[in-house]
Length: 89
Image 1: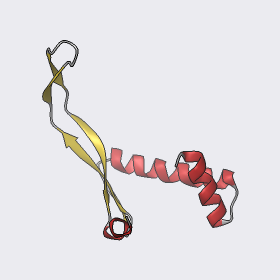
Image 2: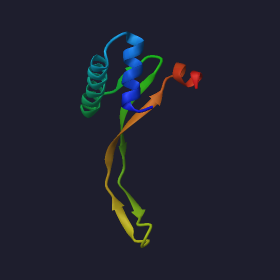
Image 3: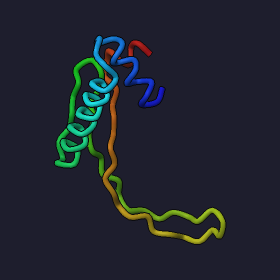
Image 4: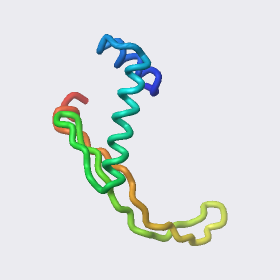
């Protein structure tokens, strides 16, 4: 499912226009992004938790040459499915 399909589904289920559904989805993603950027986490009971994880610096290899390269440390977004979502899969 892509963003347009998700927006259409939200609009249909909630009985709102696609424009309103798009604004709601954009607002949700913006709120999650700002919270994660600030170091917090977002928990949606029954769905899951969005959080930030730190990835340490490490050595990797260039697959073409086999040369060792350094990969910088970075923060990555993480999602852990909640119990209810996991049980439905």
